[in-house]
Image (cartoon, rainbow, N blue to C red; front, side):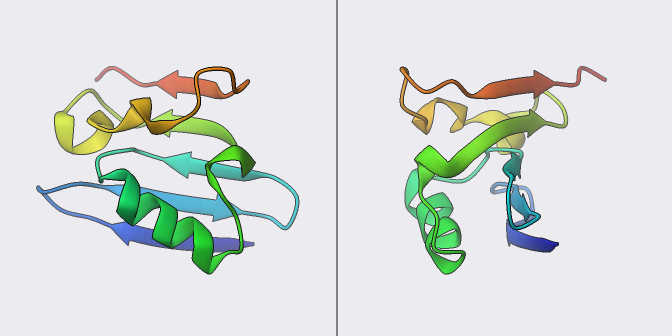
Amino acid sequence: MQILNIGSGSSGNATLVYDGETLIQIDAGLPSKKIKEGLASLNKTLNDVRGLFITHSHSDHLKYANIYPKEKNLHIAIVYL
């Protein structure tokens, strides 16, 4: 299993988790350029992400959740604390 922390802090948070088969993203608080760079380091694209888990509803965790293609069948879970 690979865990890639793309960024963590008040300016934005995003982590990728990949088990060699399924790729999920935890939080989407970073611009698409940063997310795409992280995905590229795993030889993946936005289309490869199967799920998006938002840990809570602060902008540094969900501001860029809309970067995924609208036609994509992406499973999204948001935890409200």
